[in-house]
Image 1 (tube, rainbow, N blue to C red):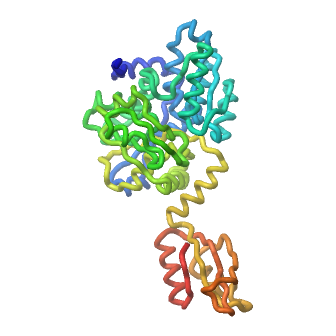
Image 2 (image 1 turned 180 degrees about the horizontal axis):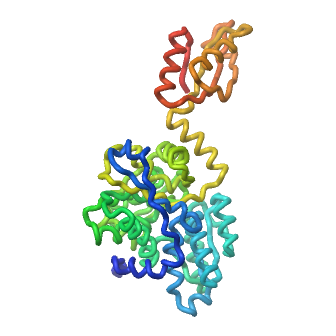
Image 3 (image 1 turned 90 degrees about the horizontal axis):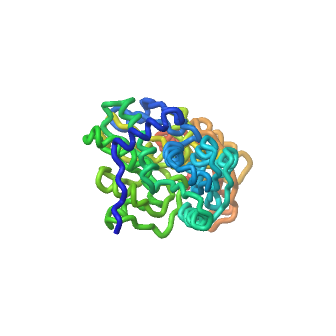
Length: 405
């Protein structure tokens, strides 16, 4: 078996020199909101403000800038759910290289349009990024185009690692760095850049629990594919880690943990409300880890926001889902007397309690109802879990039969 190519701090520093006029040095923003949860200072590395809306331009440009003239003439091919696609497309445009990108069916429309907008050809293939990657590999073998892998190449890892260099330059006293993780390129790159200079910094990978290939792979001692994935975080829905990043992660990363879909929604809404940052679900998982594991990470802690390319329609659904997960939405079934004024009285009680009614529906036929009763299904907006509990207590004190959900 061939040895897996390594990546060093010097590789990352050389990558930084290549990328210095190409990528944006993204800001590191303090978060008082998250500091309260973490028990100490928390900073947000806003790669959602990077060119193309994610960190992916770092690795893609470095890999393509190092192609020979012959390789450039053959063109490049890539596979991506959207962020790597845009990074490859922009890099190809800047370098004058022809690019084709395979995307899984159902890839976010804004990511597809942006990829085409940078001049790349887009072809849909399969359900997951892994399916699109197979198609891209076949195209490379058939045509001689160079495959620009989304994470499994030393140049990709070194390019992504420049994000870690920036973090230590911006916050030398960082104690932990939480990194959204799919195939492992960003996590491995940051680990190389950080651990070589500050081995005491805790580097943590974060995956969606319903699309997490790293925990099983680390237990098995080798990249191991997961059978099924189902997550809103399409940007990190990768079924199997890459050999190159896996070799780094298993030796230099302190922990890889998972977060729930509800936690991702809460993080996304919190970032919009409190940090005024638009982040896609994959980009919010590091913040979700801080919320789901309060006080678990040494501070100052840095949460990398890996991308911000989110479909506006998905944004609306995520806001609703996140508000429900945070206790801001309450779904009730309340039994009232089926007579004029019965519903008005209930709505008045809700208004007096400071709840905002969003939706109302009647149900008159049920074996649990008396002939003179109606069940009202009602959705209300509250100020949070404490307000929701007070509202329920108030309704029940007034003799209301209330079922939540």
